[in-house]
Length: 113
Length: 115
Image (cartoon, rainbow over all chains, first blue to last red; front, side, top):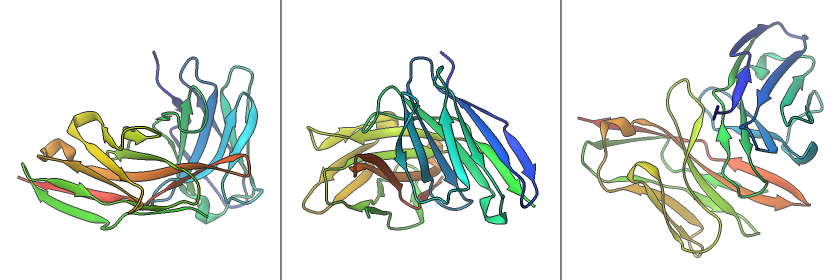
Protein backbone atom coordinates (compact mmCIF):
# COMPACT_ATOMS: atom_id res chain seq x y z
CA UNK A 1 0.00 0.00 0.00
CA UNK A 2 1.14 3.50 -0.76
CA UNK A 3 1.80 5.72 2.21
CA UNK A 4 0.51 9.22 2.78
CA UNK A 5 1.32 11.39 -0.21
CA UNK A 6 1.56 15.16 -0.29
CA UNK A 7 1.89 17.63 -3.12
CA UNK A 8 3.76 19.65 -4.00
CA UNK A 9 7.00 18.74 -2.25
CA UNK A 10 8.34 22.27 -2.36
CA UNK A 11 6.71 25.61 -2.98
CA UNK A 12 7.86 29.23 -3.11
CA UNK A 13 5.33 32.03 -2.70
CA UNK A 14 5.45 35.74 -1.97
CA UNK A 15 3.76 37.59 0.86
CA UNK A 16 0.04 38.12 0.38
CA UNK A 17 -0.40 35.20 -1.97
CA UNK A 18 -2.60 32.18 -1.41
CA UNK A 19 -1.45 28.55 -1.32
CA UNK A 20 -3.19 25.17 -1.51
CA UNK A 21 -1.50 22.05 -0.22
CA UNK A 22 -2.82 18.58 -0.95
CA UNK A 23 -2.77 15.29 0.90
CA UNK A 24 -3.86 11.78 0.01
CA UNK A 25 -4.26 9.44 2.99
CA UNK A 26 -3.44 5.79 3.16
CA UNK A 27 -6.15 3.76 1.47
CA UNK A 28 -8.91 3.03 3.97
CA UNK A 29 -8.00 5.83 6.32
CA UNK A 30 -10.81 8.30 6.98
CA UNK A 31 -8.98 10.81 9.17
CA UNK A 32 -6.52 13.43 7.99
CA UNK A 33 -4.62 15.87 10.18
CA UNK A 34 -2.48 18.85 9.22
CA UNK A 35 0.57 20.16 11.09
CA UNK A 36 2.95 23.08 10.66
CA UNK A 37 6.58 22.51 11.56
CA UNK A 38 8.73 25.60 11.65
CA UNK A 39 12.47 24.93 11.39
CA UNK A 40 13.87 23.84 14.72
CA UNK A 41 10.50 23.34 16.39
CA UNK A 42 8.02 20.57 16.96
CA UNK A 43 4.94 20.18 14.74
CA UNK A 44 2.01 22.43 15.58
CA UNK A 45 -1.46 20.97 15.13
CA UNK A 46 -3.62 22.86 12.64
CA UNK A 47 -6.67 20.74 11.79
CA UNK A 48 -8.09 17.26 11.93
CA UNK A 49 -10.82 15.99 9.63
CA UNK A 50 -12.68 12.74 10.07
CA UNK A 51 -15.37 11.55 7.69
CA UNK A 52 -15.28 14.95 5.99
CA UNK A 53 -16.06 16.83 9.19
CA UNK A 54 -13.72 19.02 11.20
CA UNK A 55 -12.95 17.21 14.45
CA UNK A 56 -9.97 19.16 15.72
CA UNK A 57 -8.52 22.63 15.45
CA UNK A 58 -5.32 24.18 16.72
CA UNK A 59 -4.54 27.80 17.49
CA UNK A 60 -4.16 29.15 13.97
CA UNK A 61 -5.73 32.26 12.44
CA UNK A 62 -8.68 32.14 10.08
CA UNK A 63 -6.27 32.53 7.15
CA UNK A 64 -5.82 28.78 7.51
CA UNK A 65 -8.64 26.56 6.31
CA UNK A 66 -9.00 22.99 5.17
CA UNK A 67 -11.47 20.54 3.77
CA UNK A 68 -11.77 16.83 3.19
CA UNK A 69 -13.23 15.33 0.06
CA UNK A 70 -15.48 12.26 -0.37
CA UNK A 71 -12.42 10.15 -1.24
CA UNK A 72 -10.87 11.34 2.10
CA UNK A 73 -8.12 13.34 0.47
CA UNK A 74 -7.65 16.80 1.90
CA UNK A 75 -6.56 20.32 1.06
CA UNK A 76 -5.02 22.91 3.34
CA UNK A 77 -5.47 26.50 2.21
CA UNK A 78 -3.56 29.47 3.52
CA UNK A 79 -4.56 32.99 2.50
CA UNK A 80 -2.62 36.25 2.72
CA UNK A 81 0.70 34.51 3.27
CA UNK A 82 3.13 35.94 5.79
CA UNK A 83 6.85 35.36 6.05
CA UNK A 84 6.18 33.43 9.24
CA UNK A 85 4.13 30.88 7.33
CA UNK A 86 7.36 29.46 5.93
CA UNK A 87 7.51 25.94 7.28
CA UNK A 88 7.20 22.24 6.58
CA UNK A 89 3.53 21.31 6.38
CA UNK A 90 2.86 17.74 7.39
CA UNK A 91 -0.20 15.66 6.70
CA UNK A 92 -1.02 12.56 8.71
CA UNK A 93 -3.71 9.95 8.25
CA UNK A 94 -5.28 7.41 10.56
CA UNK A 95 -8.14 4.97 10.26
CA UNK A 96 -10.11 6.49 13.09
CA UNK A 97 -9.86 9.42 15.42
CA UNK A 98 -8.41 10.12 18.84
CA UNK A 99 -5.62 7.92 20.01
CA UNK A 100 -5.12 6.09 16.78
CA UNK A 101 -1.71 5.79 15.17
CA UNK A 102 -1.09 8.58 12.71
CA UNK A 103 1.00 7.96 9.61
CA UNK A 104 2.82 11.01 8.35
CA UNK A 105 3.59 12.05 4.82
CA UNK A 106 6.95 13.55 3.79
CA UNK A 107 5.58 17.08 3.97
CA UNK A 108 5.41 20.15 1.76
CA UNK A 109 8.12 22.69 2.34
CA UNK A 110 6.72 26.20 1.86
CA UNK A 111 8.95 29.23 1.56
CA UNK A 112 7.33 32.66 1.67
CA UNK A 113 9.47 35.52 0.35
CA UNK B 1 -4.15 24.10 27.71
CA UNK B 2 -2.16 20.93 27.76
CA UNK B 3 1.59 21.05 27.33
CA UNK B 4 4.51 18.76 26.65
CA UNK B 5 8.01 19.44 27.92
CA UNK B 6 11.04 17.66 26.55
CA UNK B 7 14.08 18.24 28.71
CA UNK B 8 17.23 18.69 26.67
CA UNK B 9 17.05 19.89 23.11
CA UNK B 10 20.26 17.96 22.36
CA UNK B 11 21.40 14.67 23.90
CA UNK B 12 24.68 12.91 23.09
CA UNK B 13 25.38 9.28 23.95
CA UNK B 14 28.13 6.87 23.00
CA UNK B 15 27.31 3.94 20.76
CA UNK B 16 26.17 1.08 23.00
CA UNK B 17 25.19 3.35 25.87
CA UNK B 18 21.74 3.80 27.38
CA UNK B 19 19.45 6.28 25.65
CA UNK B 20 17.11 8.28 27.89
CA UNK B 21 14.95 11.02 26.41
CA UNK B 22 12.69 12.82 28.85
CA UNK B 23 9.09 13.88 28.35
CA UNK B 24 6.72 15.42 30.86
CA UNK B 25 3.18 16.43 30.11
CA UNK B 26 0.41 18.36 31.75
CA UNK B 27 -3.11 17.16 31.19
CA UNK B 28 -6.29 17.48 33.19
CA UNK B 29 -7.89 14.64 31.25
CA UNK B 30 -6.59 11.18 30.41
CA UNK B 31 -4.08 11.65 27.63
CA UNK B 32 -2.86 9.50 24.84
CA UNK B 33 0.92 9.73 24.61
CA UNK B 34 3.19 9.19 21.64
CA UNK B 35 6.86 9.21 20.69
CA UNK B 36 7.83 9.96 17.11
CA UNK B 37 11.20 9.99 15.35
CA UNK B 38 12.11 12.30 12.49
CA UNK B 39 15.12 11.79 10.25
CA UNK B 40 16.45 14.77 8.27
CA UNK B 41 14.14 15.94 5.49
CA UNK B 42 11.57 13.29 6.29
CA UNK B 43 8.18 13.09 7.95
CA UNK B 44 7.55 11.64 11.39
CA UNK B 45 7.50 7.95 12.17
CA UNK B 46 5.69 6.52 15.18
CA UNK B 47 7.98 4.77 17.67
CA UNK B 48 5.37 3.83 20.27
CA UNK B 49 2.18 5.00 21.92
CA UNK B 50 0.31 4.71 25.19
CA UNK B 51 -3.48 4.78 25.20
CA UNK B 52 -4.71 2.51 28.00
CA UNK B 53 -3.59 -0.64 29.76
CA UNK B 54 0.00 -1.61 30.45
CA UNK B 55 2.09 1.37 31.42
CA UNK B 56 5.32 -0.01 29.93
CA UNK B 57 5.08 0.29 26.20
CA UNK B 58 7.43 -1.34 23.74
CA UNK B 59 8.00 0.16 20.34
CA UNK B 60 10.04 -0.32 17.23
CA UNK B 61 13.82 -0.42 16.99
CA UNK B 62 14.22 -1.52 20.62
CA UNK B 63 12.70 1.60 22.17
CA UNK B 64 10.32 1.55 25.11
CA UNK B 65 8.61 4.09 27.34
CA UNK B 66 6.86 3.99 30.67
CA UNK B 67 3.76 6.00 31.49
CA UNK B 68 3.99 7.29 35.06
CA UNK B 69 0.82 9.11 35.95
CA UNK B 70 2.07 10.24 39.37
CA UNK B 71 5.07 11.89 37.74
CA UNK B 72 3.22 12.96 34.56
CA UNK B 73 6.10 11.51 32.61
CA UNK B 74 6.56 9.35 29.53
CA UNK B 75 10.32 8.98 29.14
CA UNK B 76 11.78 7.11 26.17
CA UNK B 77 14.59 4.61 26.68
CA UNK B 78 16.74 2.21 24.71
CA UNK B 79 19.33 -0.02 26.41
CA UNK B 80 22.00 0.29 23.74
CA UNK B 81 22.32 3.12 21.23
CA UNK B 82 23.07 2.45 17.57
CA UNK B 83 24.47 4.94 15.10
CA UNK B 84 21.21 4.67 13.17
CA UNK B 85 19.33 6.10 16.18
CA UNK B 86 20.74 9.56 15.49
CA UNK B 87 17.64 11.63 14.70
CA UNK B 88 15.19 14.03 16.29
CA UNK B 89 12.61 12.65 18.70
CA UNK B 90 9.27 14.19 19.52
CA UNK B 91 6.89 13.46 22.38
CA UNK B 92 3.22 14.24 21.78
CA UNK B 93 -0.03 14.18 23.73
CA UNK B 94 -3.53 13.85 22.29
CA UNK B 95 -6.71 14.59 24.20
CA UNK B 96 -10.30 15.68 23.79
CA UNK B 97 -11.25 19.26 24.62
CA UNK B 98 -14.81 20.49 24.11
CA UNK B 99 -15.51 17.55 21.84
CA UNK B 100 -12.56 18.45 19.66
CA UNK B 101 -9.32 16.55 19.38
CA UNK B 102 -6.22 18.48 20.34
CA UNK B 103 -2.65 17.42 19.68
CA UNK B 104 0.41 18.96 21.29
CA UNK B 105 3.99 18.11 20.40
CA UNK B 106 7.08 18.81 22.42
CA UNK B 107 9.89 20.89 20.97
CA UNK B 108 11.96 17.84 20.18
CA UNK B 109 15.27 16.31 21.28
CA UNK B 110 18.08 15.77 18.82
CA UNK B 111 19.95 12.59 19.62
CA UNK B 112 23.60 12.36 18.64
CA UNK B 113 25.31 8.96 18.81
CA UNK B 114 29.07 9.09 19.15
CA UNK B 115 31.06 6.16 17.76
